[in-house]
Amino acid sequence: MSYQVSCVELLADDWVRVRDIRLRSLLESPQAFGGTYENEKLFDEQCWRAEFEKQAFIIATADGVDAAIMYVENLEGDFGASSWIGGCWTDPNFRGAGLMRAMFNFLDCNAQERGWLVQGLGVWTDNDSAIAAYEKLGFVEMGGPQPSSRQPGKFYQQMIRKTLRA
Image 1: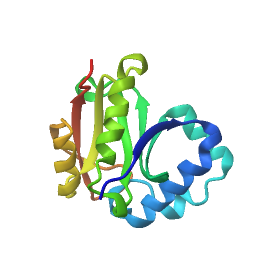
Image 2: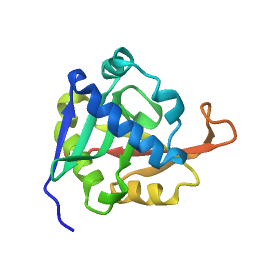
Image 3: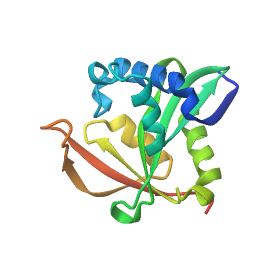
């Protein structure tokens, strides 16, 4: 199916949109994230607005529906990363429609001015479909599996990607 896709970086006044899609992601794919629905559903407006001070939120819409999300945090990370990608999720009703690729294209278009030239992320080592999707976007595994501090007993893999429009 073909959708009209657009991407936008949300502002703190859009905190309700971020909250709604983030909570949907935690309900639908709880195994994919370090955070939990039980914890984040308790965040109030002030907590959600504070998240915008730490990171940028990018949303992809499909035919006007908020259908995918990611956040981008500026940092000096492992393996030369200048930014960290997190919270990536696509609504199952829109998977395969290119929303994640659209968000990374949006990120690439803004990479130079925002300092997002080398992106890092962490993915659970048992999430083969996510690892494959990130590899298609140009990410490569770096280092070995790392123990999670947020979910003891789980391991994540760091992956790195250089922007395609540097």
